Image (cartoon, rainbow, N blue to C red; front, side, top):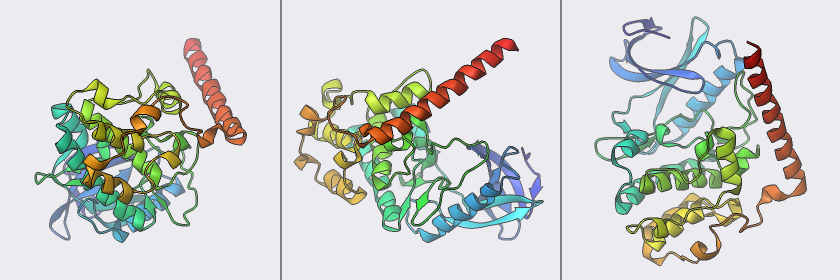
Length: 323
């Protein structure tokens, strides 16, 4: 890991901001432009993985395609000592994760207004054929003006993009707490996958907790597939049936039962009092829809994945006992 004041290419490291799934993220001073920027550099395990460079190139291309106040801008990329890196604009603000820790549960009006701004940025992505696929509070910064900004487009799906396999990386893209059922089953997902993640985040803003939990990632994923969707208006008196219905429709297991696209979700937010709340009566329990992953072919794939992961997990436990 680079240290403060180290020079990397024409950048001077000022601060280590975060560690992502495969990268270290730094605040750095660009000696050429005289501005502070964000540097994204692969960690040691990922250096030498050819797909890492392709990932950075794709991420940069995506960020340069988009122009929206809710989306971080990409500034450039390069290689230094055979190490690829990505340069993005520096956003001053706190992460949505910090906001949740400090303030959740938020007032419903504040939470929904924040989600509406994120949804507008995601709609812009989707209209350019870009699906984020790793939306979570850690990947959203909120400026002092209250503008949320979406970060980290490393797992995006773009039109015509092929699958990229990264060394030391799980085949299931996303973060278990926010992964849609179709992602858990190994599908690539579409804009309704981002709608699901946004619904989970809205639930968390409103309650201070996640709708689905467990002792480990496998248990969390099982809850996304089988757990009952909590009915928020019955759990918290300050949440209206309309707000509860907005959340419930966003996090339906079957993508066909969610909002068809982000603009449809935004339209419901803008007309909150007119939302059909009938979904609260028939659409919140396990097995209320006929999810597409219950088709025989998909179940066999899903079962195979679960069995494989279980075998690996048991093997690691046995190995630890031997040591």
